[in-house]
Length: 387
Figure 1 (cartoon, rainbow, N blue to C red):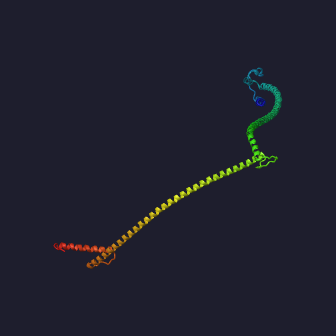
Figure 2: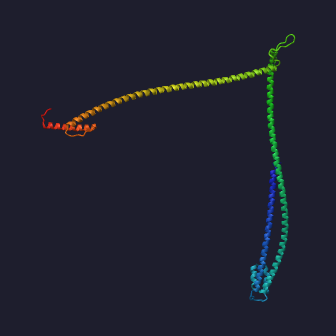
Figure 3: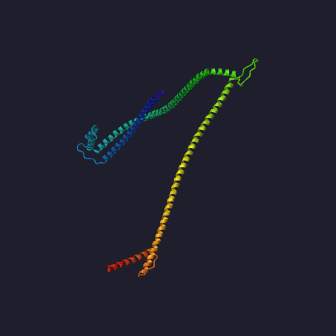
């Protein structure tokens, strides 16, 4: 049903569209007929006005001369037979008749046109009445169609709402069904898991029954043996199997605690050993580093001592060389002074007394040069002279 509704909607909308189109066409025809009626009425009124104007103009014109019969019987006959001819030929005939004949002809044409006008007016009135009745009928049908269309639209809206609600309910039902199916699957898996656990528990029960029997024997053994009088003495205080199991659980938890503590202490011991080995390695590295630094500083100290000795030797050497140079300088200065004094005492030139050794050496050089020139001049003048 939900698949057939869209097709029904399409067909109904198609019929509604065709009906609306036909109503619009009928309205357009009515409007066009009213326009045609008004145009024809205006045209008829214009023709009557033109004929009246022509008649008044013909009566005002002077009477034209007519050849032949003055009464115009032949013209009347021609005028009477001109109704079957065209308008141009009729106007040519009326030009050669008298004004009275032309006026009578115009009146006759006016009467004919008036009768025709009345006939057409009655016809148009009847057609207008018919058109008005048809228009009112069409309007009534249009209103009915509009009411039907509104009702049908409401009906379609209600059907759409019902369809949407039905789809929503169907979707909800589908979601509910899927959720229930998932719940069934989960419960089925849970049931299978419970069955599997039950089988495992049965197997474990069958396996542990022997241990139960063993515990009962242990309980009988540790609970004490009765004497001949029927009194029972308890050696370890176990009266039921649960006491043995509780004792076993306590010992097991204590064992687990001690095992965990042992593992923790072993881990801490391993961590401490690792940290101690790392500390020892670090200290060894630091000792090696410090030894290397000490050796490097010793080398630097030896180098500094050697540089110091070399510097001291260079200083002593420079001091000795300075002392020697000073001594030589003093000797040179003393020799220069002695020579300067001797040259100044023996020379006739009065040299200035100057403490500058260079000036004194200059004086000595001049004196020796002069003396050398004198000796050469003497030998040149006395070739056989000997010392």
